[in-house]
Length: 423
Image 1 (tube, rainbow, N blue to C red):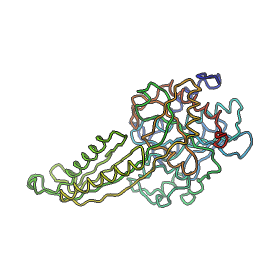
Image 2: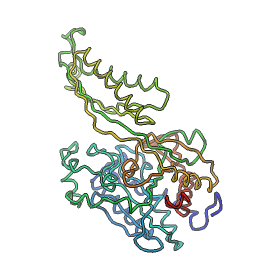
Image 3: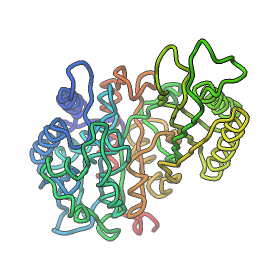
């Protein structure tokens, strides 16, 4: 293919992808917004639609033991190791329609283009739609990709959602056997690499006026839940100086977290995304408050130092206010660097389509954080309007969708496994 060109076979890739994005977005748990969480009826309906698209693209396709949608396009001979592509198809609550599905659907369309042209490569291509990257329903992220990587923790099956439904029960209702999740696991020798196309979820590419970029690394993240317990009391009778107000203490902690991250100019970010106060009455001093903490940084060492500093500050605030503190780490993922040999091939594909090569890290987590255990990881970012994500206003222009599809198709067709790339 000539740089920046799109032949008759792939000229409509962007339009095909956008059409399917809209179809998938119509499958939601509510009519007011887009919400599609793990092991729901809507999740199952989405899986069936994606299976249809995979099969129409010439792939053999099935649901695996955790609910991942898996398609395979054989190479020029059977049973070759694969280049795995994909992303997730679950969403956050009140979501945008591009986060996850863009990478999954673009990969399917690229394979469909190869199949229409009868093109077989010296490796297989597999496309995986991961069932649960967001972790919204059972508060455990990357369940689909952890199952594929063989790092799924069996204990997670015992957790319950907000309605009290155990994951085990939800898996059975979905049509899966919770005792056979291990069957989803793949081995390193089966994969040449894992590559994911994804919206940036930030404003950097837009600021650079670029449609696509090369991802350098996926930032690690630490998540904690803090619970402060004081003493509930009457809002009108307890003097301010005698109060053990858990919510006021929580507010001070949240301010300290924000200040710590605001004064760090090297990429540290901290977020309190959820807070709950009890007993929750207008005329009662809150006796207990719980809140989440999410800390991310460009390096693991930086993140760990920041977390330790934040924990010390929360402990000091709790002690000074005479509040008891429970602090639990609920999630910790290491920083995942994208493999240099894959970054080079992503850059070559971007350049080959006539775009400047620009590198940037990912502050958001992705399935590559699990897949790194069995494969080298590469990523392509696509510009999203305003850098908005996890929000209904999340949007990617058609021209950028098409640019991402052309880059991914070029990357696939010119892909060289690591041993060949080093020659």
